[in-house]
Each structure stands twice: as structure tokens, then as C-alpha cells.
Image (cartoon, rainbow, N blue to C red):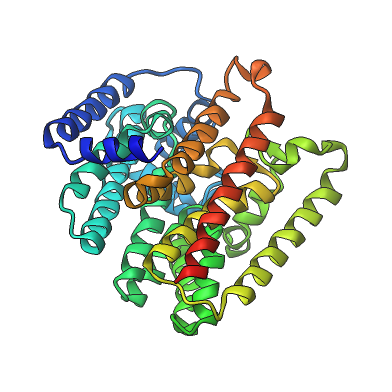
Length: 379
């Protein structure tokens, strides 16, 4: 494994290879953008929302309860509707744009922390070319790259010790997607360690409030806007939605009971983990490993997870991959789990051994925990 890691590291220092990968990623995206498969979310939700916006006065349409996302993404859809450009192309290009901004944050962080300038190019070569990233934005017209961009931006500013910008970005990410909470335990630990100020956490609800303010002013009831995430959580009564996590082993017949137990267990794991680690010394490497662990562990133990909910975990896996080549099997494991999760949404669903994949997922988490604990013991 060490020999393979060294060879990959050497390849990633070759500018020609990196630029070929960048152009390959862009080329594949151009091929995928016009494709319009049977896309559940775009055909059943996003495109009808855009049509509703067009038929109801554009921004004036925001007074109506026609969407189950937060208003932040709907503002973008309103601009797309107003522009008159092709809706499918516009939605995909928007998500692709945030992919590259995410790659910039990854590359900028790596260059600043390692001094290796080629890692900026490597970030642009690897992240947008990941199979699941291509599927998410360029093929399926999903928007996970948007909130993920702000999560990574938040971490970037956090490691730069710019706490205001960090929590502002975290608040913006939360205003797009609830899945931002996967990294909240990491920030909570930093609070216990007195590495961040408590009052910066107020930026998260404040940013969310300001994000819903235009929709409220335009006429949608505040009570609806404040409970969007609560209503989202009750949309589907399934313990897992194609993510091979802990809940593939449990019966959906006991959904309410198991869901509540899962939420309680997640809170306990977060609190206990934070209190156990609060006096441990964390260097840059161990902090990267810990936030990566949060992003892959909590989708495993939380109920109601979709196949796309490893998106932040995959993004941080790229950071981990470019920092720790000797542990290459860990990010590759996460990439594999996420990719197969997407396949579970296809006609191959019945042929994929989800229980075995769940065991593999747990194995990768165990490897990451072991790697993190080794860091804090030897620091």
C-alpha cells in the first residue's frame, strides 16, 4: 500500500497528468449536462418549482408553499426562471460552479498548510472528476455541491482562525441543507476546548433567519419557514433511503421507535465524544481526521439518510487523500460506498448486497477512528 501511495503521490506532482484530468472532468461534464434521464428530483420537484415561479410572478411566487427546500435554493431557481435560460442546463451549471469553488477551497487549504503548490491543481483535477460528484451535479441536477462548498469554506476560514467568516459560512451552509449538522459536533468540541467563542454560534440561526426573511416579507408565513427542516424529516417514513448504514439491518416496521432511538444515540455519541476529547491536544492533521470522521460517522448512525448524504464526507475524503497518501484505502473506501449507494437508486438495486456494504462502511469508519486515535496518542 505504501508503494502504491508513493506512486500516486509522484503522479500527482506531474502537471501534464493533472491538467489532463482537469480537462477530462470538464469534458465529461459537458457531455452530461444535456442528458435528461428519468431524474426523480428534477422532474418531480425542481422543474415544476421553476414552472410555478414563472407562472406566479417570479419572486412574488415565494409567498406560496410550493417547495419543501429552504428559500435559499429557491432564490437561485427564481433567478434561473427569470433569466429564461434552459432550466436543466442552468440548474446543473449552478451546481458545477460550486464544485469548482469547493475545489478552490480544498486546494487553497492544502497549499497553505503544506506549501505544496501542485495540490491546488490536484484538487481541481480530483474533486470535480469523482464519479459521485459527476452524477450529483452534471447528471442528476442535484445541489449538494452548494451547501458542501460553504461547509468546506467554513473549515477553511476556521483553520485560518477567522471565526466570524467560518461561522457565517457554516450558517449559510445550514440555510441550504440540514445535512450541515454532520460537522456540528466538531465545532462543539472546539467550543469545549475554548478554541472558538460561544457567541459565534449565534451566527448560524441568525444567518438562517436572514435567509428566510425575503420569503417572509413576500408573504409566506414565518411558522412555515421556521419548520421547513422539521417537515422535511417527516416526508419519508424510511430508516434509510439507499445509504447502506446501520439501518439496513433493522426493520422499517418499527420506524418511529428506531428513529427516536437513533436520534438519541447520535446525540449521546456527539456529547460523550466531545467531552472525552476536550482535553486532548489536536494538531492540524488530527483535526482534519476528526471532521472527516464526523462527516462519515453520523450518516452511518443517523436514521433517514439518503444516498447523497456522504457528499461532505467524500469532499473531506479528498482532503484526507491529498494529505495522507499512506492511508489511501480510507478515502477510496468512502468513494466506493458513496458510488454504490447511488447505484442503489438504479435498476441494479436488487443485485447489490447492502448488508455486506454496511459492514464495509463500518470497517472504513473503524480504520479512520484507529488512525485518529493513533494521532492523539502519539502527539
